[in-house]
Amino acid sequence: MIFRSINSYLTLLDAEGLLVSYDVTDVTKTVRHYSFNSKDVTGGTLFVAKGVHFKKEYLDEAFSRGAVAYVAAAPVAGCGECIIVSDVRRAMAVLAREFWGDPSGELELFAITGTKGKSTTSFFLKYILDGDAERKGGSVCGLSTTVDQFDGKTHKYPMNTTPESPDLYRLLHAGTENGLDRFVVECSSQALKYDRVWGLEFAVAAITNVGYDHISPSEHPDFDDYFSSKLSIFDRCRVACVNLDDPHADKTAEYASRCERVVTFGFSSGADVRATDIECDGAGSRFTVNAFGESERVSLPMAGKFNVSNALCAAAMALSAGVPLSVCAGALSGAKVGGRMECHESADGKVRVIIDFAHNELSFRALFNAVERDYPGCAVITVAGWYGGKAQNRRKEVGLLTAVHSDLTVITEKDSGDEPFSDIASEVGRWIASAGGRYAVFENRRAALEYAFAVDTGERKKLILLCGQGADRWIKRGGEFVPTPSDNDNLETVMEKYDREHPGGKSE
Image (cartoon, rainbow, N blue to C red; front, side, top):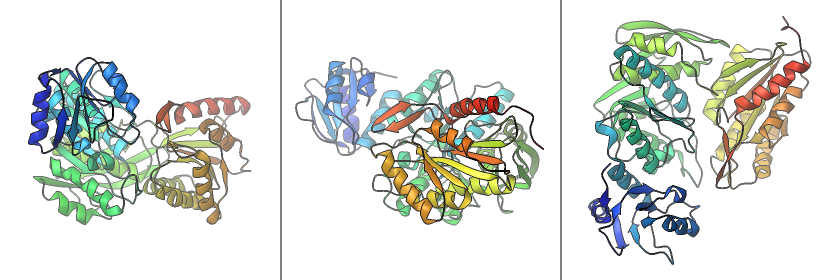
């Protein structure tokens, strides 16, 4: 990075049509750091004041730590040295690219969005790109997803699916400093709508699928806004990968046609990258990938046809970047993603648990379809949480699904935010009851899982679906991210106790 004066940033904001006014005593001061987190501020920091939860004390702390000026949509009373802009989100990204540098010239960037499967596909793609790097003697691939940020040296647990633009540009800059040449970025609809990835140029981008989700006053006002936000990923890429099995494939392909090249994937015979001879069971999925005149057999150690679709998406993206099909197939055969369709079984064989990140209607439908195919006759207990303050449509949609497909739903916590958990649980419970379903409520996720283990299902084997948290080790309460055990951690504790109390071999 190159340290520049405040005046240089003022000139840049003015050129982008974002500068409204400024009140800075000395514009020749050097900007030595850039952040929107007051606790990250050091001497010479240009600080961004943004967000509905922003408080004046954050700004006071930033100046006490050495900030030279702040950027905001309006002046904050009692605080000087300000730069006022017309669009804080866009300005954040413009300033981030200027401070951390444009990584597009040094990194081959891959971007993935969609209603479900983004994280899984991102990990599948990293497996493939790492396999290609090993073949060529290159560096591993960087990663920015819901569950992991990897800059080539360190792993960091993220707070957002896609980091705010200053953090994303900093992460990509670290990747270049650490010698990476490829980076996979998971993009949420909010990140695309609010310019978190502004200024980045992607070599390859893909939409896994599009369903009705994130429709709320605080996110997307309607489906058209949500869908158009997803489609905008193709405004900044060279190769677009489109899922022909998606109900919105025609509109997606039409929009993607503005890119230099479009590669399709799916189960359709017309897809460029397609799967045939598919076999799925509780142990995983086996299928043949057919692409551009070649075929390779894959044994994916993850169950569910939807994971075959995720694998096809990753393969299509890698093939678009010149990775051989044989490398794609080999890497996918060893690919595992924590908290995604992880299957576990008790020592006595009477309790099976699937940990999955299912959290919206599309992902729950796919999960229940896989369960009904692979685990017939089991008593199904779904343990799930619903978000507070956003995606309220899921309370009805997912609640009705769990009522129909589960013997019992255990409602638990998942990112209640500013909304009382009791209110969320009450609303979800009403929808479950309206469909004739049974439910119980335990705010603590471990207590909810313990209850599911204790439920008597008679002679039927028990299948517990532990959904929505996966490998996440935090829960959002109010405006804070509170550390909490992951579902994997909770299951390890509860299963160990169950196995001690129920010794003996597995039943036939």
